[in-house]
Length: 104
View (cartoon, rainbow, N blue to C red):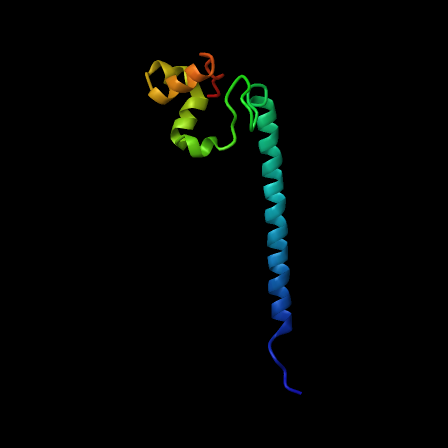
């Protein structure tokens, strides 16, 4: 009988891929849980995802603002407002002139 392919090799590759996928999904799950924990501890008091609260709704914020600007805003919004940054002043005024808590 003619032997076709190496089935042991395929099994090893499949098993390796399955282990890698399992580890990746587990790491993603842990990252998501850590992100939720950080959000609940630092952000949820003032922000909701889809509704304005003390601060603006956060869904889609990464598309609305430049990442580097967001980092500056989160780190110290008061400093950014005082610098005269037009976008910072606008967000400040849209939110009853309440500066965001600084997270250095």
